[in-house]
Structures are given as structure tokens and as C-alpha cells.
Length: 367
Image (cartoon, rainbow, N blue to C red; front, side, top):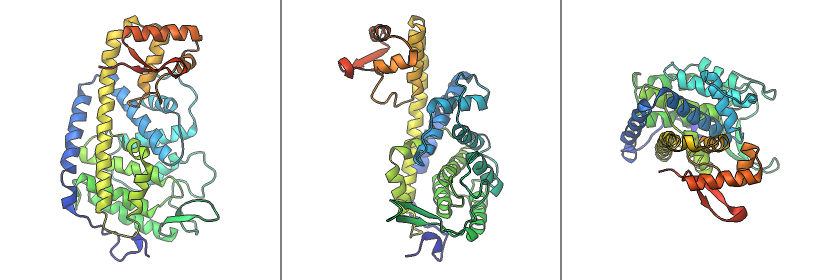
């Protein structure tokens, strides 16, 4: 059976518009609500939100590819790049790389997409790696570009991308298509259709030796930002990482077909879920401000440090709740002091307690 890029009408994707109705309107409605609230935040709060959302996106787009980075380090790296104060000194190269790429997407979303754009992203994303033949350039190796799972003895081939000698030509057409389908282009497309096709189209070519997933999702963010006329605030990779199987299954269903209706439905629903998660992050930031307005003067430095750390974890909070061990690790204090501090926070109404003895966990009490 032929792969999608081998079909006669490639890359003329087809889809049923009737099945996509309502997604676009919902996208712009959620975007408008998020940007409306964002504009009401003061400059410091806006910076906090950028750091929170960009670090979460950087962490999750890497996790999708099996690379697990540190949230606090990512936030520190973003703060450095934005000229904000940060206390953490050690940041790995992988954390710096993904942050630099994502900030370039964020600030330069309106720039025309070119080969050089993609090469620059790949160059910074792969800095320090010695296992690649090509960095900052399309692949040229003669081996087939295969997407596989399973062991070496019995691998399962999910997809085979075009051979390297075809990549430059196919990418030239992809870049022309991407720029032509922008809102002000020759053949504009609805925002979610354009972004969804862009991701699928790029991933089908798989032009780089590595980093295609992260760059492909960066292209989505660029497309969405262009449609809004400002950098998008969206937790796309957060939603994808929560159910990677659904993401890969949706992509895999298009491997042998140019009818991508199901993919666009999945993609649109994912973007909307990502927007809803972003909305929760904004709401959490507002609650954080109110929280410290209410309790700030009643906290000691240890308690303040732990509560700030809990808010840094975002909407999901600490996995399984905050334990006494977490408190001790963060504050470097004794168990007795940690117990007193936590009991005081519960009595104050800042935390709520669940469980007993070693199973006791604490959660932010937000109203």
C-alpha cells in the first residue's frame, strides 16, 4: 500500500467541511477571552504567565519525544531570555535549546516561513549533539526515514517518509503552501484547517534527522499566532502529551490517505482543549494574586517558599498533593518545623488536608 506522499494527488488533501463547523468560531471566542483577561493583568503578571505557559509547552513538547526536562530550569531559562530575575544557575543545554527555539517562534511568529527559519530552529534545537549527520539542514542520508516501534529484531514500521533526495523539493512546495494559505496569502485557509494541515504535511515529509515533532508543533504555534495577529497563549503540547497514543493514532490514520477529515477533527478538538487549559492557567494566576493578598502578611519565609512552589506546578499541582517530605525537601527544615508550618497553613485556610499519617497530603485552598 502506498504512503500518503506517494499518492497521485499528493499534497492535495481533502476533508469534509460540514464535520468541522463550529470549531473556528469556538477557537476565536476562546482566544478573545484569553487575550482580554491577559490585557487586564499588570506587566509582572503577564511575565509570570508567559514564563508559566512557555515552560509548560517546552517541557511537554520535549516529553512527547521521550525527553524529560526540569520545569524549574525551563522557567529560569525563559526568565533569563526575557531579562527577568532568576535564582537558578544550572540549566542544561537541552533546556536552553528548546527555550530559544520556542521564544523565536513566540516573538517572530509573523515572519514569512523559509528554509532558513526551519534550519535556524533545527540548529538551536540540536546544539551540542554529536550523533547527527546534519544539523541546521535537511537530511541527506541514504537510509530510509522510518517511524518505528518495537525492538530491533521485530520492529513495527508505522510510516516511511520520502527519501532524502526528495526532501528539498517537497519542502519548497510545503513552504510555498504555508505562506500562500496565510490570511493575507494567495489562497487563505481557515485557521484550524491551515494549522492542522501544516502539522500533518510537515510530519509526512519528516525533513530532518531528528526534531521533526518539536519543529512540527512549533509550526502549528506559528500558524495559530499568525491568524490571531499576536503570539498565541496555548498549551497544545500539554494536551497532546496527556494522551500521546491518540495523537500518534490520529497521525497514523492519514498514512495511506489524503482524506484528512478525522485528523482535522482530532486536531481542532485538541487545540480547543489546549485553549481551555490555558484559560485555567490564567485563572490560576489571578487566584494566586488574590491568595497572597489575603495570606501574604501571615506567612513565614518557609511557608511562602512552599506555596510559591505549589503555584509553580500549575493547574495540576503536585502529583498526588504536597507531602511533609516535599515540604522538608523544599525548605531544608526539620520534620517538627514542617509539621507545625503545615498545620498552621491548614488553620489559616491556605491549605486543605487530605488523608492521615504517612498518606497525608496538602492542597491549595482556592476560592
